[in-house]
Each structure stands twice: as structure tokens, then as C-alpha cells.
Amino acid sequence: KVVSKLKLDRFFSSKLILAIDLFVSLSASICTLMFVRVMLSSDSLTVQFIATWLSLSLVLSSLFFYLFKTYRTIIRHSTLREFAKICIASFLKVLVLGTFMILLPFGDTYYAILMALDLSLTIVFLLLVRVIMIVMYDALREKVISSRKRMNVMVYGVGDKSVALVKRLANSPHYNVLGYLNFGQRL
Image (cartoon, rainbow, N blue to C red; front, side, top):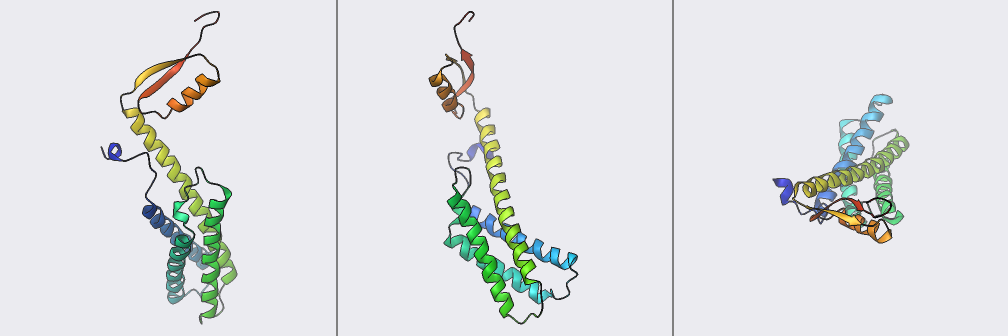
């Protein structure tokens, strides 16, 4: 019942996407810290260091995602420019984060590894979440459209215009295309 109340002519809310982006970015930072802590047996990653890293990560992600308006990028009909915004915002987040952490008195830490891994995970996680959002949206939309009572139709001919008509009707909430009707040797 909730599904039928959704307005499927629009995608997700920009605020929701921004919240998801911030969660994903923070998750990438957490995964980075866990990886370095476990794999490199780093004792220099103290609770204070981890808290500072995560706090700065959240603040900088909020700032750069908002400035670059990455929450407006859904990827389905995106160009390289929209993908670049996500990459640049993530890069600036990690660059400023690393710079702040180096200036703070935390001692010798694996800053290069932390920064490279955080950047990589942030970009990969953000793109993965965007793709998942598109797949979920399409599945939800298809479910809602297929649950509605639609009129079954046959399209006459198999020319370019007939195929274009079928493509247009494929997402129609009113019509369900059953196939083509074409005269030849046989009907």
C-alpha cells in the first residue's frame, strides 16, 4: 500500500540522497580505519585519533557534498561532469582531512594509506549506492506499474514507428503491449 502512494514520476528526495551520501562517506572512513588498524597493527590509531578522523570526515563530507551538489547526481542520465563532482568532492574531503590530521599532534601514522584508502572506498561506495538506488527504483516502479490494471494492446506493423510506439508504451501506466500484429504470408 505504501508503494502505491509513492510518486514514481520523481526520484528520491535530495535531502535523503545527501543523508545517504554522508552515511556512505562516514562508512568508508570507518572501513578505512578498521582496515589500517587490523592489517597494519597500528597502535597509533588511538580513540582520540579515530574520533577526530570520523568527526572531520563527516563535517568535510557535508561541506563538499553540499558545495558540489553531489546529492543531485543520480547517475542514470549523468555525464562525466556529474561523476567528476562526486570524485572531486571526495578528493577534497580526503585532502583537507589528511592536512588537518597531519597538523594535529597525533604522531607517526599511516596518513598516505589512510587517505588513499578513504578516497577509494568513498568513491566506490558512493557509486555503488547510486547504482543500487537506480535498480531499486526501477524494480519498485515496475511493480507499481504492473500491479495497475492496464489495457492490453497489439501494435500493427513492425516498422520504425511501431517499434518507437512500443518503446513509448513500455513505461505507460495505461497500456500493456502484448506484441506486434503484421500481415505477410500469414497473419
